[in-house]
Image 1 (cartoon, one colour):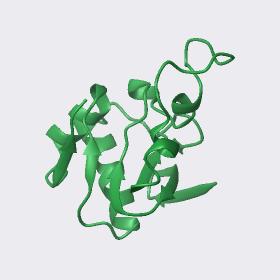
Image 2 (cartoon, one colour):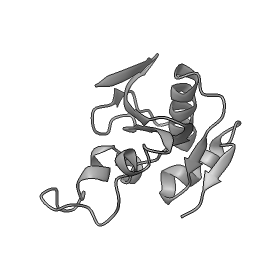
Image 3 (cartoon, rainbow, N blue to C red):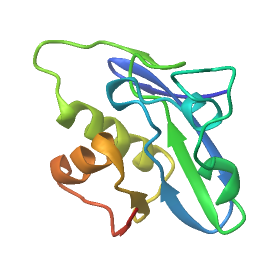
Image 4 (cartoon, rainbow, N blue to C red):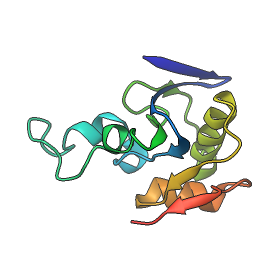
Length: 129
């Protein structure tokens, strides 16, 4: 299990495959976590009704995904001043940590949309739904 340490958080992330980097935003909104690609959040015993891009896209891309702070295996401070800019900062810091200056990213769901809107350095190319 890979952990990226920030001053106020420990972010769990995974990297699979090779090729152009693709930053994924897992389902779950504020509880966004990689496990939700593998299992339905509403019924963990059932397979999800969607593909697992961490596996399915790894043949063409370097697929990067993470658990949001305080979701899944990530831990971190959450204060009243934190908002989508905090999560966007976590994503950008992870990409810096991995030395990725450019990446494509998913923009599906709230985390992807908010990250792109809050980022001073938006994704170079977004993958539409």
